[in-house]
Image (cartoon, rainbow, N blue to C red; front, side, top):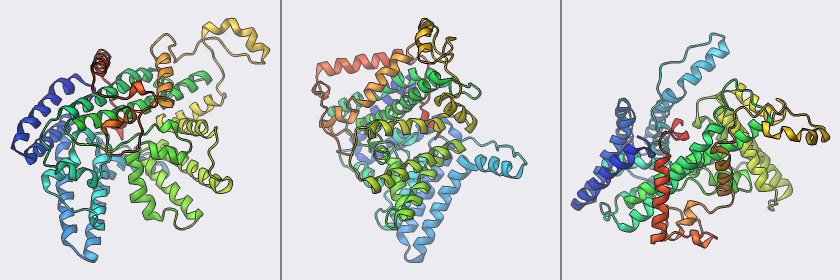
Amino acid sequence: MLFNSFGFLFIYLPVVLAGYAWLGRYGPRAAMAWLTVASLAFYGYWDVRYLPLLLASIAGNFWLARRLGAAAGAARRRWLWAGLGANLLLLGYFKYMNFFVLAIGTLTGQHGQPWAIVLPIGISFFTFTQIAFLVDCYRGAASEPGIVQYGLFVSYFPHLIAGPVLHHREMMPQFADPAQGRLRAANVAVGLSIFVIGLAKKTLIADNLSDMVAPVYAAGAHPQLVEAWIATLAYTLQLYFDFSGYSDMAIGLSRLFGVKLPLNFNSPYKARDISDFWRCWHMTLSRFLRDYLYVPLGGNRLGPARRYANLMVTMLLGGLWHGAGWTFVLWGGLHGLYLVIQHAWRGWRGGAARWWHQPLTLMAVMLAWVTFRAPDLATAADVYRALAGGAGLSLPHGLAASGQLFASLGLHPGFDGVRWIDFGGLGPPTLAVAAVLALWAPNTQEIFFHYEPAIERIFHAPTWRWLDWHPSPAWGVAMLTLFLGCLLSMNKVSEFLYFQF
């Protein structure tokens, strides 16, 4: 059941809200139990075969947390390693087994066949959430709560499928709040408005960019210069509006119940360096990789060489987290290399900002997205070759009259059309609007600044004062109009890109 589906909007969500309000009269535990059951039903709708897997993961980690809490000395370490091993084996089997089977087959020349394994949706998110919880229990920074609270913490439906990665210290106090179970008009107004903006990002922007991307990145497409650059820019914006749209929808849905989620985005394409980009893109995953991988490896405490090695290892594993394929490993490696270059440059030339830092960072990120999007390394190489001009230049038919001008510049492109880009469709104008919004407009958290939409308070009110959201008839009409536009565009429901991770 997708957030951008009629079944979710007009059946599931109203039923969950009504049950929450009704059971909330009997206390917060009843309301939390209802949300837990509703979240498990939401997961089971995708594939009921994997609901027992989620339940077993929740029960097993809850039991391990209790063992950790009761143990002392070396026994605590053994329980921790047992928990980490169990979680990583589960994730490794479902997500990476075929990757290793094919890699070993390639190395041995036996070309092994992939196993019939279906990836359970959301497994990366609920596994990482529980790994962080076990580690913090070991460190004494967390203790196992009641089973209802813990089950809701892991399975909470706004975050379960594509994040954000939750942290116990942020969520558990909210689930235990005595005010739970009461629907408040302010929360409903803020939550629905944020949800609608996220829905618009997905249905009106990201989905209209997909037709400019998929044909160019298909295996064997062999794009040319103009096609490759347009498609790469379109994917850069498609991925952002798809994932940030989902994250806004998750924040809005959770706010309906008076629960704030952590942020995942803070205008990452405005970043002035790669470190800043990773502080603003998929923020909860970046936090997890920093706190539970980079810092335990030694962080920046053991000298520059070790720091660079830690950065590379962290980003390579971060790339592999996104998908079991060499394209994701290469993408993570590119970002690791970017970070090493940035820190080396900063140590040599200092950290003063320059006007060209933002466009250079955006270009580096965009070029790395090629490997993230390509289905295999051969297709990625084709796209890179086209971006560099190695596949030739073909322009639309309408520019044929300018042939003399191009010839005077020493250029002799073909005018047989750009095969994969429909300049008469919604894609090109959507691309222009998306670029303006991503690079210059205030983000959702700034628009709702005065109503603290998420856990973090790292924003300021929008510079454009007319975009400062507040309950009013004008904003109500605007949100209703936007919602109706989204409904009219939902004739072809598409999945969120991050569901595959």
